[in-house]
Length: 106
Length: 262
Image (cartoon, rainbow over all chains, first blue to last red; front, side, top):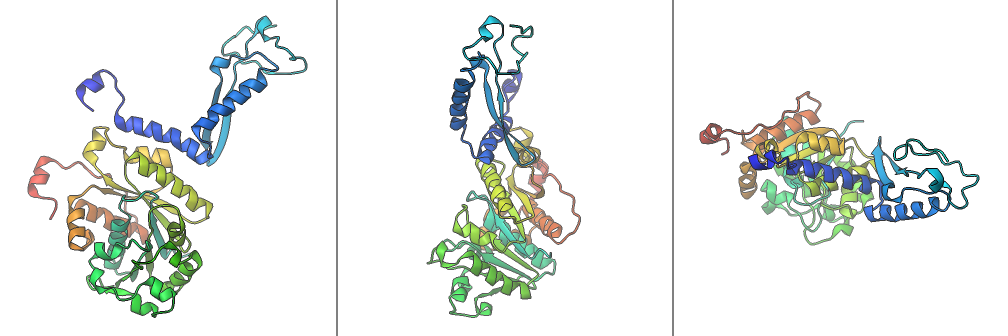
């Protein structure tokens, strides 16, 4: 890594290698190819948004790997206010994410 | 359990399994152990040529398994160490010539006579690898500081664990300290973070390795080269000595001037 690369804050190739490895190994270990995760995300969005309004742009679906066990972690921000009254929402008890809309009330 | 059968594997080809097997086997023999190195790569044998014993092969392990010779007839004695033997494999057969049960049986015979049986696994995760894994008491996974071999090492470590074999330890081979320092190469710490597997040795890139395989003389026989030192340290760790893991150092211009390789 030369002086200029360092000056412009370019990441070293070893660092890039490590990050790429960590990502790909999560999928290798869980035996879920990254493309399948994208499909799972679409499915989840379709199912959840039948009941509640969600912030589709910020849904995150990830596989994590801790202590030799893989976990699917899904983060779905809900939209609040009157937008939240999605069709067929009655009876659902979705917990609101306060990340996007801190003063959630309907 | 006494860990007699040690399998050297990697997933990816070309990372240095055969060189590692030859040198660890020779280093253990130089420590006074009775050692046999067994070539697990049926059809693509190379342990014989790396050790310089290729001209002495009459029978091989497939001949023994198929009843054409006694085990003793297939063993080639390496006179450069007190008790070092090579059990070659067949060059004109394929991986299906031996199955895992037969491999276990061969190793059970060898266990009676030897302190250590070091198996050079073929690349890949197919039957040749399964054969090499079946009798293992301990598995050494060789990797280079490079993304594809690290990824394959992770896959192999997973397979070894799912077969309930182990312990698994890692050998980082061909590390170039100067490039790690410049952050152009994965460091030992990076690989530990990614694979979370115990490291039993770090072997630096070493010009002496190519000339040693050119000549058929493993570096541990006559070398003070960095790789020879690293392999001897691994052998001492294998027999239970407490040898701290040292990071290979960058060599300065004056060290190169004095000549670190033969």
